Image (cartoon, rainbow, N blue to C red; front, side, top):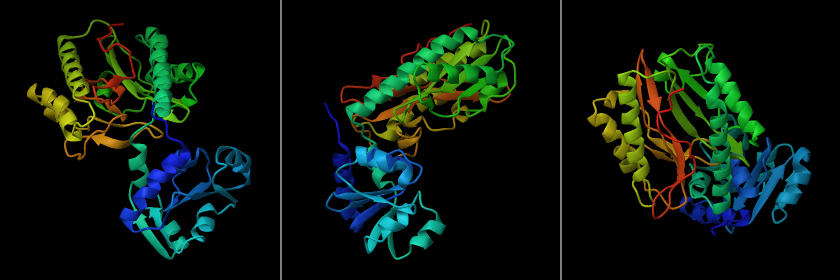
Length: 350
């Protein structure tokens, strides 16, 4: 079983520093600090040195937790966490995508911008991380099963979203993994529609995109259901998206090109004449963030590695009419994908 300690993670990051000509990395993004030390904090920074050793700075509110979680790292208790660690090295790499211009100017000196260094290490998950995702997905599945019977004409999108959120937390989630999406009728043509006061009507398709957060790891699942007997065009679009989603899932395995996985699903939709109605990427990595490396899209480079959790979420969106999206969270394996969201993808008519 593949399990990485926090020290192992810091060592992997340290090994990449030489490629950037940097003797150390100042980590200020809270998610990356958590990944490298275990400390979830609103005010912490880590310094990773080229030999794999490190330092952690946080303020007095988190001192006891930090001492317990990271006994093998020198701990500095200081309110200004980035400045205190910066003082220990002459030249340091910084997380360019997470640091503001103001913070960069304040730290001063020889700062080497790097992009996505810790994120690249985070991409491949160990089995403990995958188990946390598996639990998050199980809660997501169960919440759907408990709420779907309440979806009916007259309830609002916001009510459905609240029911899903409540059930996930009741089942053990820390909170929803992201703002739950519920889109009914014509609102289904908006991929990231915010739940509104619109009441569900008979004849609607209703798309629900949601997930649970467990131990910091984010589940992500989308299902589209029909309220009342669906029209012919609704069944046709649903079947098309289901076929595309199946093709995308089957293309997922270690070694697959990110663009090829996207094309496996996108070509199904394009061949049916709906290329212009599917304009977002096929999927994205999930883990300590809801959107993280890798990303699946027509122009994305790179290949999937073993033990990478990703989503596969094709959709067809017809302005003024509605839409369908079907999404699963799965993990790449050498012999094919492991599906984590297990709710049926058959069209549910309620």
